[in-house]
Length: 82
Image (tube, rainbow, N blue to C red; front, side, top):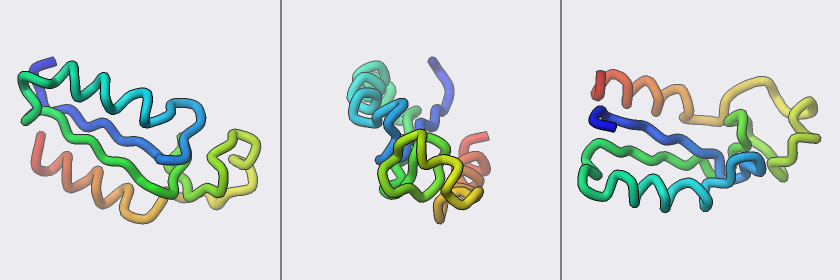
């Protein structure tokens, strides 16, 4: 990968746990860390919704909106990097 890369995670994601992904990503980009941006949203699940547990069983009970700051962060990153 030779282009700016954004990796976004929800801390409560039980499908793709951030702790299993962040270190390998950092390792892969070790010689070009300037290309990698990692953002973790503390209250978010896999769908970037505010969640209690992150379990897929609560998806249908959560508000159908992104966690605070998600769209703003994504938009700013895209504006800077594209």
